Length: 296
Ligand SMILES: NC(=O)c1ccc[n+]([C@@H]2O[C@H](COP(=O)([O-])OP(=O)(O)OC[C@H]3O[C@@H](n4cnc5c(N)ncnc54)[C@H](OP(=O)(O)O)[C@@H]3O)[C@@H](O)[C@H]2O)c1
Image (cartoon, rainbow, N blue to C red; front, top):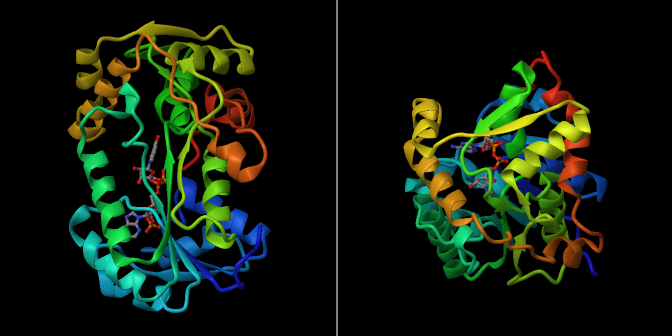
């Protein structure tokens, strides 16, 4: 596949799970990187050899300098939505290509078809990018494998039981490294304009089976215990936003009784199969170790 001339790529969300890995893939491919953060002190946690730029998605003009002359922009939005139109307009005026991290809300599978504000916002972001006419690609990961760390590691650091709702819900967790690798390719490789990639892992697994895989990898007798949705709401109150909890519960409820949607997009773009969930767990086993300290 032909590569575009080497101009810097602006990576938003560069200090987060996906963006940080995108930065790594771009560096490995020899592509100059501008990493965006709101916190200049975060530069110390980013790899050497990149340019760290300060900017805030809620202050559109703060992105102008960072985007100027960028060959492509990786756009990952975790900020409030109000400034999205102004940001997209400013980015499109300064770069040739935008790769947007979205979600599989167009995929006709019950898991992805539960109405939620996040899906509506992703649809709006996609429309904004498309309307600018800039070359664009949409990357739509399903459930991240790394959610297992946020969701289940606290229980497994403290004991051997995971209490969670909808143990029978099936998902196909995608390894963050595969998501980032696909995003990076579409940023520096030609041939992805108009591309729309739904990224999943290769295997449909119930949530209870995923917890079982963690126990097998750790070599510990880990047990899954079903929790009611009402209890989950009570337990997450004050820790997770209500709409996010509602989104998860309705998606899991819809994912009981049938296999998860599995796509071939990771293999199609990278030429190698997606990493299995078991591999993700093995590579992050320390996160679940009894008594270990959570990584920031
Ligand atoms: N979890 C899933 O299963 C899943 C599935 C599909 C899609 N997604 C999508 O994935 C995205 C989350 O990615 P992630 O997990 O990599 O994120 P993350 O680890 O939570 O990192 C968030 C990033 O956003 C940056 N950020 C936050 N507010 C900002 C602002 N106002 N201006 C500029 N940057 C800002 C932060 O940078 P600084 O703090 O350094 O400024 C940080 O780098 C979301 O869009 C989500 O919808 C998630």
